[in-house]
Image 1 (tube, rainbow, N blue to C red):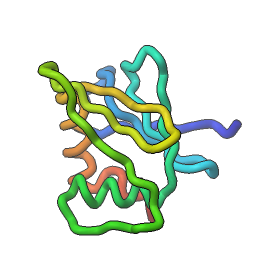
Image 2 (image 1 turned 90 degrees about the vertical axis):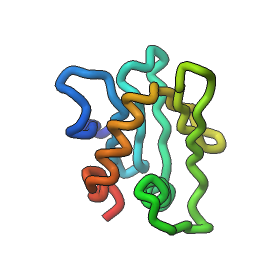
Image 3 (image 1 turned 30 degrees about the vertical axis):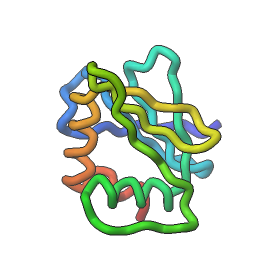
Length: 113
């Protein structure tokens, strides 16, 4: 197993739990460092690129890429990122917002270059 170098948004405070992203030859990996179950969603660069575009509110959809879906559930603002046949990554609204702000700042673009 290759070493995985996780990246989080610079808008997530030092030592804070946050949404993390990494790349290996197997794909793009997404996790929430506070998730006690350690769920890691692995997807394709194309699907991750589509997610980035949607979070940047840029119209783009690759019909070949499996969809990554973001849902908000409950009164607590729990955010779930999921895809067919993959673990669900769960985070809270504050951490998700830090990730989205990082996406909009281009901090994760290199994962799809």
